[in-house]
Length: 302
Image (cartoon, rainbow, N blue to C red; front, side, top):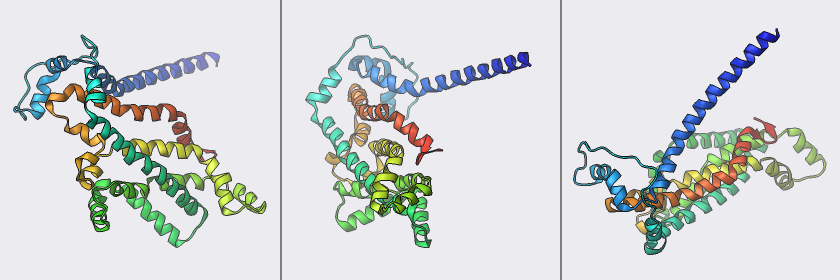
């Protein structure tokens, strides 16, 4: 029996090692583009052109659509470290920083106010039953399943009718009332044991006190994880600003990155690196909340 147990343990450990090796390999593949972008942002423009110039000529230049026969050299370590691109982005070209702050101005209000709306709406969906509630919640699910491209034209028509096209409100309002956070937080609040709420009602607690003292604290991890997902989603938005904001000066950095021309490839790497920093910081400081919010729902293990 002991010998069989040892064999099973060895097989289990071997499987864990193989699985770990596969996961590490997959993780490296996902991390390589980030490392590649950061390292190349410190290359001189001439070195970038020498290594990858033919790619960009084939994509955006006069030879667009032609086969590239020259060998492309992928490099992670620059021959000479250069900060010229960052100096240009941060000091000599205010357009990039303007677009960066456009992204902040568009995304932060959406995350804050969508969470406020979602918390109140999800509490109502979780606490009350009825046919009207079921119909509304079912509508939320249908809207969430639809890709944004499907609702983009109706959003444009409504924004144009309200006279808010080419303003930040055209981006804020659809984002604030998006059903994504409502759906997730409703599922979280429904998992809160009914006995806890009934005990609070017996003690004389009203709905507001139940919401602020019981439901909100038990859903903190889920709220944090939803905030992270919302920030990442809207930080990378492209279609909404392109359709709803005609003035290019109001576009976020996510849209502006695609418009950097052929002669600014080095700057593109530097801007992309700066663009990644908020997302990486949010994930770095919110990783525990994200994992906990997915694993635990309403104080109960999911």
